[in-house]
Length: 317
Image (tube, rainbow, N blue to C red; front, side, top):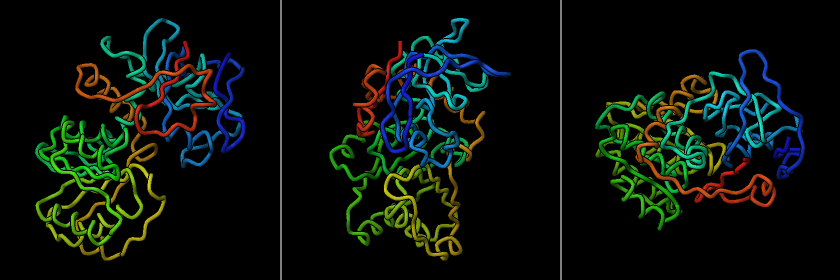
């Protein structure tokens, strides 16, 4: 079968022939139609993501849309290595498939599932968002961050604060539900002061896609705010940096609850449930994401495309 095959770490996958997948116990075969390109897909193919396990060569892709052998149209998540989603066929555990709503097309479903799940699971499974609470999305100008703003409002947030480096995109977030925007300026002290002003009014949850310097300033500003109610800080991505420097007093002297959300941080069955809920809501027109359909045969020339907008979705059939 044809597939996007990761042969060498750090190099784009090549389009070629790979062995046919054979379902094992508890697995189903999926005839793939679409699979999206995301930072998670790239880092797992390169072996740099914490969840990477399989040795090369392997088929790239962590999720996608397709049809089971019985004709049912499904979204699927985490195929069994060395098989991935960027192939004509793959195998996945039956419990990691979600039936797609009739009103949702394959390209949109593939594009929105992974980035949308990141905030849905963070807010529902980890932070336990309650209606009326205030959510700050750190790194809201990327595809996942833009969805996080929309999803936070959909799930009942009373106020959403969005941060980002791209000032023009940041301005557009008001139309998606952001009540306040904070540009991530280079002056760390000024940035921390902007954060402290918002913490003084009240922030219940932070969904962080960046880590790095802005996360440091957020955590310190939250600690200095000295609020009695705990701040739930959910770490989702590390676009800015993989590590931070955090004074121990920021945790000892505050009610900050620092937690992560992702593969391993949330049980797989709960991630699948989050995706199911997200796709049902997407089918009703609740959320928007820019997507561009590209044939899988063009994987090499599109692999290094920036992850922002539109999101690349490879079409297989």
